[in-house]
Image 1 (spheres, rainbow, N blue to C red):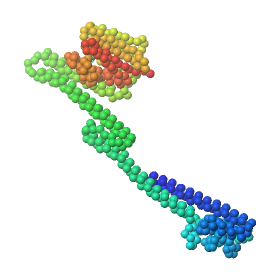
Image 2 (cartoon, rainbow, N blue to C red):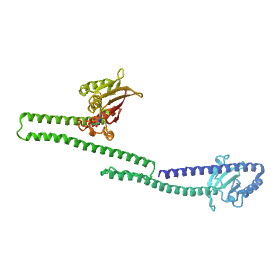
Image 3 (cartoon, rainbow, N blue to C red):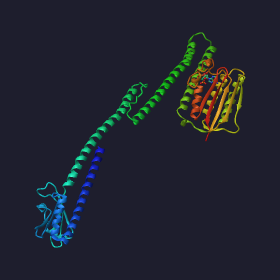
Image 4 (cartoon, rainbow, N blue to C red):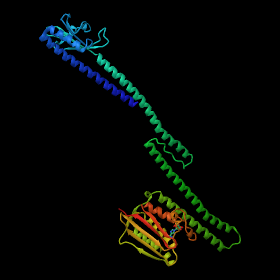
Length: 447
Ligand code: ADP
C-alpha cells in the first residue's frame, strides 16, 4: 500500500509539473508572437499583418493558430484564415480598458472545436484589438498519453508489487511458521528434533541456526541434569543401604552395650560421609552458578598453597612421602575467594597423597607466566590414571577403577575444576599409569 501510494504521489507531482510547464511554454510563445505582430502592425500596417497571419497559418496549420485583428467596434480586418476569428471571443470592454499595455491571457472552449484555445489579446495604440490563439490540442493529447501510459504502469507496478510482496511475506513467514511448528513439537518433549533450513533467506537462516544452537544447549543441559540426578540417586543409595543395614543389625537381639555403641558409631560415620558428600555437591552447584555470587578479594596464592601443604604434611609423612615445593619470591596476588581456592588445592594435594605409593615424591610449584597468568603444578609419582579414565575424572562421582579401594566420593576433582573455572582459570592433567600424575592449574593474576 505504501509503495502504491508513493507511486501515485510521484505520478501526480510529475503530472502537475508537466501541465504547468506546457502552460508556461505556450504562454511564452503567445506573448512573443503578439509582440512581433504588434511591431509588424506598427511598421507595415494591416496589409503586412494580414500576409504574415496567412503565412503563419500555413506553416503552423490552420487548426493550430488563430490570429485576428479587429477594429474597436469588433469588425474583423485581418485573420489567419476564413473563420479563424469565429472561434475567438472579442475582449470584453472592462478587460480592455483596465490596462491597455498588458496583454490579456485566457483559455477558451469555442463551439465547434474539440480542443481548447489559449488566447492572448491586446489593444493596439490605435484602439484595434489583436488576438493570438493557439490550440491546446497537442498539449491535451500529450497529457492524455501521459495519463494512459503512467496509469497503466502504476496499475502494473501496484499489482505486481502487491503480488510479489504477498509472495515474499508468505515465503518469509513459512520459515517462521516451520520454526513455530517444531517448537511446539519440542515443547511436547522431544529435544532431539532440529529445525531444517528451507532456503527462505538470511534472516530465517540465522533464526534457524540460533534456534538449533539453543536446542543443542538445552538438550545437553537436560542430559547433564539427568546424568547428575541418576548419579546422585545411585550414590545416595549405597550409604543409605549401609546405614539401614546397621540399624537392622541393632534389632537382632542378644547384643551387649559395647556392640550397640559400635553400631551407633558406624551409623554416625556413614551419616557424616553422606552429609559431607551432599555438602560438596551443594558447593559444586553454588560455584557453577556463577562467579558473581563469590566474594572476590585480592588473595595471596602462594600463601594458600603453603597453608595447604602444611595441612597435608602429616598425612604425607605417614606414607613417607617427600613434598618438594618451588615457589616464587614475594606474594602472588590473584582475585579470588580464599576458602574456595583452599578447597580446590586441598583436593588436589589430597589426591596426590591418596594415590601415591609409600616413599613416593610429590612436587608442587607456582610460577608467574606471561599474559597475566599464574601456573600451579601438582605432580606425584603415584599409581597414575588409566587412559580410559582420563577423559572422565573431572565428572561428578566418577572414580577410576584402580581407586575403588581408596576412600572417596568422586566429587573432589569436579569441585576443584568448578572453583578454578569460576576464577577464570582451568585445570589440565597429564598421567602415565604406574609412573605418576601431574595436574596443571592456570589462573589469571589480578590486573
Ligand atoms: P576421588 O578421589 O574421591 O575418587 P576425585 O574426583 O578426586 O574423586 O578423583 C576422581 C578420580 O580421578 C579418582 O577416582 C582417581 O581415579 C583419579 N585421580 C585423581 N587424582 C589422581 C592422582 N593424583 N593420581 C591418580 N589418580 C587420580
